[in-house]
Amino acid sequence: MLNEITCTYSTIPFEDGTFFSQEIFQVTELAKTWVINGFAIQLFRQGQKIYYETVKIDTGRLFIHSPIPYSGCPDKIMEGLKRRHPLLMQNGEVDFSPHCHTWKIHENAAALVNYNNDLIWNIFSSVTRYNTAYSFKDITIPSKRCHSATVDFIESLKTADIREVGNILAKEFIVTRILDEATLKKEAKQVEMFKKNFHTKESDAYASSSSKKSALFGAAGGWLTSTYLMQSVPAIVASSSELGTLAYFSAIGTGWGVFIVGGCAAAAYYGHKKPIHEAEEELEKRTKLPPERPIYVEIEPFSVASRIDKRIRVSKFTWAVMITTGHDGLCGMHASILIEGIANARFAFGKRIETPPGEYFMCQAHLIAPVHVSLINQTKLNEWFKDGLERSEIWMRPKDKVIRMLAQISKEEEMHNEIVQQGRAKEIEVNRWGADSIRKNGKHSCVTWVREKLQIADIFLPKSLSGPIITISKVYTESLYYYKKFPAVVQI
Image (cartoon, rainbow, N blue to C red; front, side, top):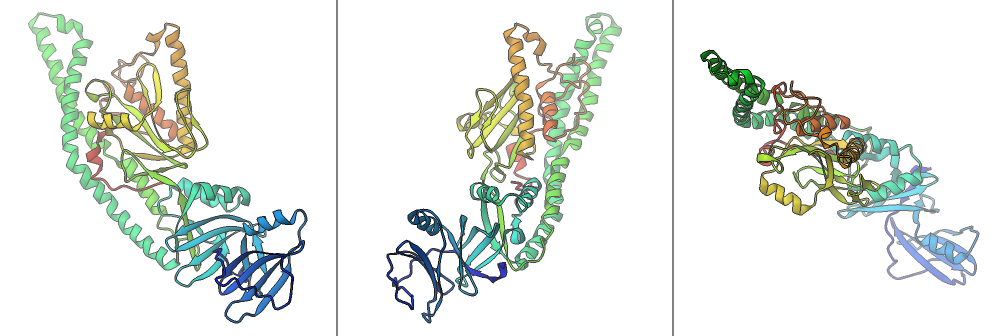
């Protein structure tokens, strides 16, 4: 039974090498000694037979001297046993369990072993110098930094094939802490307090910048609308009559008036309410406590910091998605999709994009007629920073959703390339006014194309209030400095 297990963790050579057998044996090989909770476990051979002994160190009392049945080559069996993880029962018997992996956390450690076709955590405490064992299903919890999709994945591991689980945990996850229930309750209260202040912090940060964005949108919108109206009513523009001139200037004035108001409304409307709402939902889930247990092992995926915002982290399970402007196009007025993550399996879309598993990548997708997808290296990113890179809110999405979006974009890229090769490039020209404009002609601008593709990854952005005339490329983006005012929530 599991509650009969008292120990295991370290493989520590017994200091004086004493052999504790109370009977006389001709030992041909003393293979390995483990010291666990005051007991010495010794593995040795006598001829072709393999034995183990458990001895209480302080008294020298022999608890168990037992042969280990096996079939096959004794040398190979012995080598295999030496790599296993001994579980010591209360009666002194030992189970040499297959060892999956050991994580060291400060001066403590957590070893994951396969015991009777079940995964067991074996916890070593540097404070008590003692080892305890618990079921993986009972005490494993996700860290507070895990995305809700990752939380669901961790929960699914508890019912998956244990060989697969052990392999995934060893390669993809780290043990962040070993903690008790009192610590969990304390942290849940801290998250609750942070959540209450979260909306206030983002509202204050937003209010300090909204007037600037309103003025920018109003000015740009007024100029663009005037241009639009002049192009749309050539008869009025060409007229030399007093009535025509009056209509012409009225069109310009109308454009400015409508878009100064519209720009202010757009800035107030677009804020960052939906992304913040998503973050608040994540925080709400993090205040819930797991079933009461004497101890917990907290895990999370291996992750690295975003190169756009170092407060954000990405993993193999969740990738960062954002809109960027400021680095391409006239005056930086070109919108792209930017993705950051750690490649899971082999991340490859098209012949130019290939990242080995486990490596960080940054990928850009944008409509420049044709659609283009490429990896972005640090040198290119540094150039973007110098050019005044701007970004939207960062959306954390499960990698499967992002891959689905990229796969669709790659298909479109291939189709566009074929059209260009056939000399039909006009069919995929960019419409600078955007797909929402009454002048769209069935074509996208860079920003409306971005907005459409993001929907595949479950990122839904409202249309710009200026959309019937033009969708401004920077409607969804702000400076990198602007976002430093906002609190960040890690979702890996």
